[in-house]
Length: 111
Image (cartoon, rainbow, N blue to C red; front, side, top):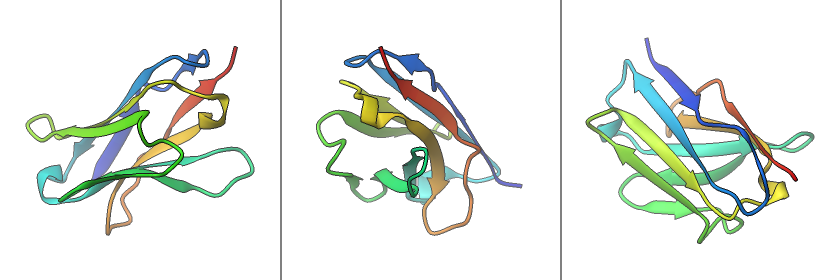
């Protein structure tokens, strides 16, 4: 049984930082491309970053967000710096090429 459990979401002020974690079980992430998506209220879910043979980022987060993974811990991370109110969303972890999603973690950027 594959499970992806996100954590690290919180309320943070503009300009602040957060690190999200995605702990995987039932799957060995080292052989898969992993991704972070987000969904803001009233908007479609969008791809934020992927980590596979290469890393890729949405234009809106380039230079501010960094995706990384610790294969020994079977965990994927999303380091988010210089956060903006428009980064407010539920952030989801996903195994790319599959239907495996986490339950999401809320990030709110507000003063």
